[in-house]
Length: 83
Image (cartoon, rainbow, N blue to C red; front, side, top):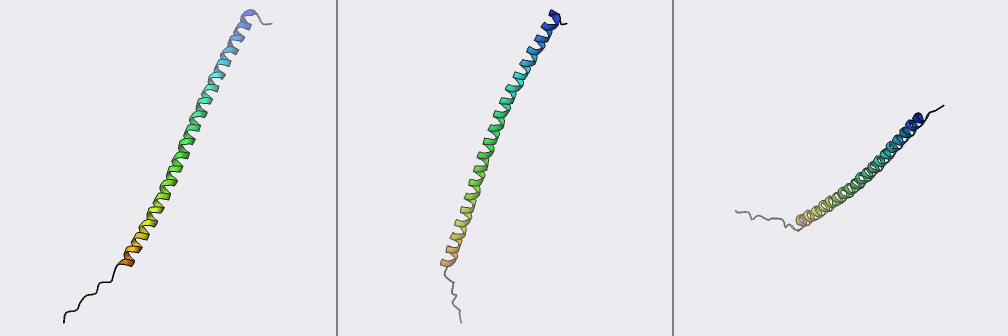
């Protein structure tokens, strides 16, 4: 049979354990929020990288078109021969 002191000790242990579970739960919520924040940042970084990649392709395309136009507009140089 449990005496009063044993019951009080058991109740105190259960209370302490309950507090620890609450602390773990709170830490879990914080960790989840941090993971969500990291995922959001990763997605934004991915979007930024995709945008940069798209911009680089556009610059490459525009440079190629410009070079083609310059080469096509260039008139051949005729040299006069001196006899």
